Image (tube, rainbow, N blue to C red):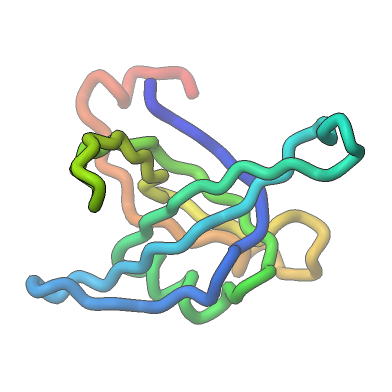
Length: 129
């Protein structure tokens, strides 16, 4: 199963774009603090590239800005490309399926999350969760 959930802060303002086929999307980064500090007592963070599509992209563009906290749930996808130095690189992107405001930020729970509809296959419907 490929499922990841992160909680962090948006590193730059989200720009809403539209694909050639009319699908709205956004790409942004989320900084996630590590639990432990480095040997000098400084915070360490990991940075995740995030892609959102459709209604979720519009929601993110409208309600989230640089520095805001965000919860993101989705799947990780890898892609290989050749960088400007000619080296082959593997990159990772979190393909968001659900985004939420972090708890305790004063947002109503009904406004806290937007996700695209999920279509279950026959075998998924039999799962107890």
